[in-house]
Length: 611
Image (cartoon, rainbow, N blue to C red; front, top):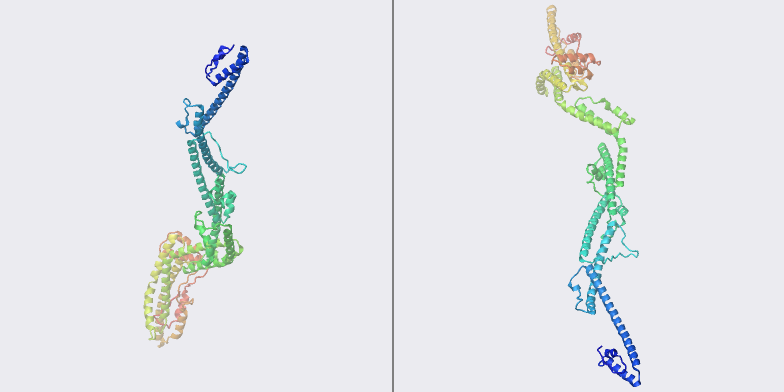
């Protein structure tokens, strides 16, 4: 307020000059002073009242100033608060720049406040957006962590927690959280894939073992069966560990069952082979039978290792075992007959320990397992087949020798037939056969010598005697060779006797003058009787092997001997050690002489053959 001059009585000069009369307030003071003058107020009272008026005005001004100062302070405080909030938001959001600064030098407080307010509102909105964005990412992170750690990430009211951390709302933090979320999502995907692989493996194992898949996986975690979405499937470490342990248990169970089933199937195969089961009888267990030749990884058929399948296979084995007991005698005896046939064809003696009566007694007593007995016979059959192959060459030579002996027997009978030269039907065929037989008979000594040499070579190679129907073949051959020599000697003596008989007849003719007629008919009957092929007389017959002790031939095999000497030595030893009489007996000299006398009227060219 400008200065004013107040004219009046007794007014203080300072007071008068403090108010300008050009202002409305100065005009009112002048009018008041005039009124006081007209009233007749004293100068002292006027000064007092002017002083009071001035004091009252000062109080009003002071109140206004204080009010203005308070408003200024409030504006400044509000501005400072908003600036602080602005700075905090800028720092929190991380978007510092010139658009978020205010010029304090050239603008009033209200202008500054008006400039800060929209910026603050924008940052507040952006903060809420950032909070929602971060909360969303954090909630997903926590949810995945909860799934991985198998914790229940929920508040008491059941709502998922929302995290409000406004200290750092920068894009860098959002990027970090998103990166963490992507890593967790990848881990979740990997775990989910692993869970699916484990569950699929459990399903395959349960199918092979015939176990309840739903019950098995529910024991690990209920969400593994019947889950409608990936989020409902539990992927925690405990679930993965549970699935791993379940798979290990199922694999161990599978291995145990495979070994058990293979053991049962092995028994089943043995019983099938033993009882010669048909394909129709095996078809019901053909799939199970394939387990024997398969590895554990190859056995993947559904239900192949179920307890029901194993039990059915065991029952089949038990059923066949019961049948085996009733058919074992038949099978063993059948194999024994097979062994006998092989030995018979090869002229070998079968092992008497497997005689039918002994086999039946052993099976009935239960002292021997029929399968082991059958295996033993099969081994003997194999050995007999192998030995028969080694004997094949000698046996073929024996057959040729026996055939030659048969021809010799036939030739003897043919030579004794008085009608052999008759012109009957078939006489020319017999004549041709006789010519061939004479050639064959001439080869018999060579056959015997070659056969003896071959047999000795066989015995020296194997250090065992060559037995023919239980008799050492060399003994038979040497004995036959000796008998042939004896027969030649008998023939020579017979010829000498015939000559002597002729001389006696001539002397009788000189003395008595007549020649007695020979009794051809009676002498021929006696001769043919003596030469019957099945008799034990002087006629020739095919050599029949006789049984001797094999031990008597062994010493001869162990010592070197000359070709001619070992024949006679073994024959003497065989005669000495054998208690049974020889089948081929040589007639005594007296018997020969009596025979000569009885057939004195026979043909001079008909020799007498003795065994």
